[in-house]
Image (tube, rainbow, N blue to C red; front, top):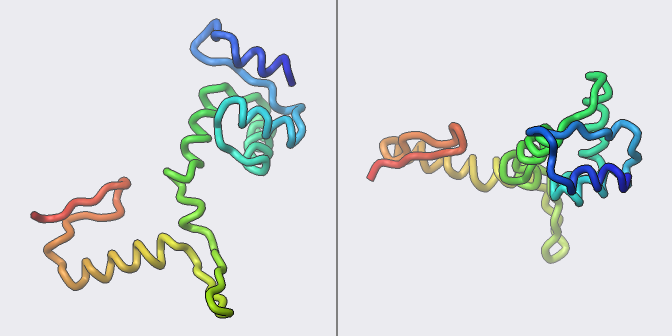
Length: 131
């Protein structure tokens, strides 16, 4: 594992490096994620490892960066899309997707009440309103 981390720390000879992750265990994959600042969990890294094993090759550092960005909270909204249970004053509420419940559905209701106000929403991670 230390050889792999040293390889990553050095300047690449090419525009990318092929990283040998197929033999790493979950803890080593998590260490790699932390070292590369990918913010991918152990489970995420194991999933990536399986994908590349199925493809019969090792990933490049660039591919790992792209996956990390694509699977990030900013792009994928994992927390906003999760099922969350919380309890207030002994009452437990289950929310299936904070995004859908408190952002998307509320926004759609506003758009229905004011159809000429919102020109576009929830397309390509952008929205436009009429001023």
